[in-house]
Image 1 (tube, rainbow, N blue to C red):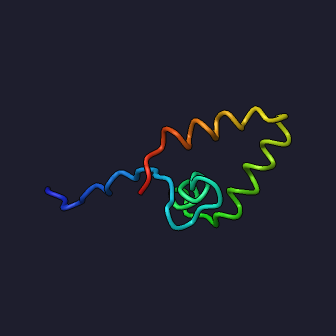
Image 2: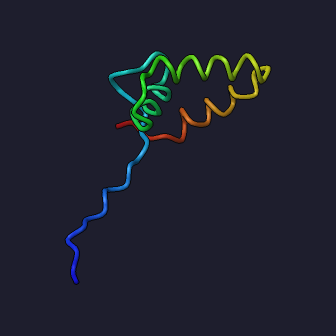
Length: 69
C-alpha cells in the first residue's frame, strides 16, 4: 500500500514587518500561533509586570535573534 500523504512544510517564526508596535516580535509570534496580535501583546505586558521585568531581556533577545519576514 502506498499513501500519497505529504508532510506539511515546517513553520518558521519571523518578526512581522506589517504588524509591529516596537520590533514586530509579538506580531510574528501571533502569526506563528494563529492568534490575534493583541492577545500576544497583552500576554507579553502581563508577563513583564508579573515577572518584575525578567521577560524584558527575553523580548530584547528575540528582537535581535529573530529574522524579519
